[in-house]
Image: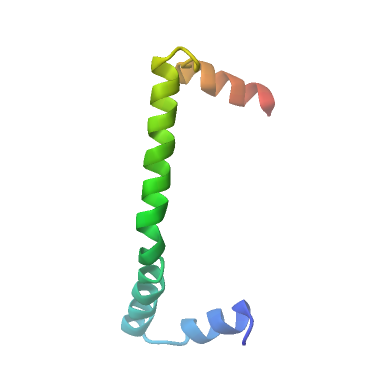
Amino acid sequence: MPDINTLTNAALELAPVQRAELIESLLASFDSQRAEIDKLWADEAERRVDAYDQGKLRASSADEVFNRIEQQK
């Protein structure tokens, strides 16, 4: 199997329409996994909402979150 650089260079030699078709094909290859990924994220969101509702999880304001990020730099 060719390496990623070889594939990329070959793809860049394609006509714009062919490159667009290639991109669509590559992105479509993720669709089969997309539904499972979406379900996993939805489940995680529900767990977090439940934990918050039960007082097991504290919410932080956006300002608090951004301040913590800035302090880590």
